[in-house]
Length: 318
Image 1 (cartoon, rainbow, N blue to C red):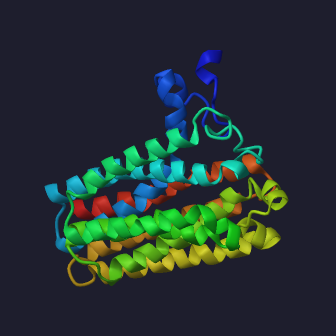
Image 2 (image 1 turned 30 degrees about the vertical axis):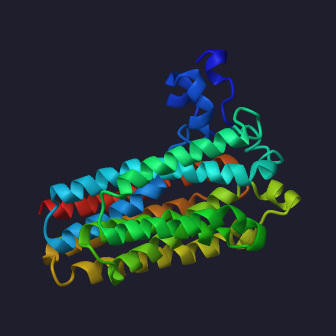
């Protein structure tokens, strides 16, 4: 890439990403504001949607065109709402971001985008996502609207609790509830258990992520589970791993025991087992004092989360 291509590049973005390389220069600050140059967050928002949808489709006995649209709608919606959520986060955190080495290059603190421009961009993304939400059933629409309360609160959580990752988990895994409801029409216990698994997973991966900023966070008074756990992080992550696998397996059993054949249920549970092994692999390689290693492990959760998706898809083919 030329110097012009990399001008304004965010510090923790993947080098050579499509925004810095191919996007029209005028759009780059806004796409960076949406984290389009850092797609891992979109995946982490989308994957629980596909967990809930896959479980619902299996419980109904087939994957239909209706399910296919929900899968696509969730993918588009995840990209838009992750962008809107990150924009809101950067608006509220603009003063904190300017004081942290890793985040001071973000569009608002670096002066690439004004606060008014960021608000307009956030509203535009949200409205398009709302149009997609309106294609789902009423209960799913109401769930989608209800999620906005958590999204609004999350950026402020690190100011009043040592557990802001819980609020992130509540927001990022809401799609498990929404996608199930969009497919099944009503919200029942199985997706709630899968939702709980997602929250535990978020506590696992975002605690790893937060260790990148723990020194700066301490200086500016921002709270996180990384600072709370400190040298005991590995022990806490092990608890989250166990909770994730337990809740996920329980949710799939509750969803499929009455309708899916034993081979489908076994295959779905094998996906949970393989997912758990990936988390265990991350835990074995963790070095909380190596920011690059923490970022690499955090990003690997895209592949981790897609493992159960693949097994659910295989079960649907049977």
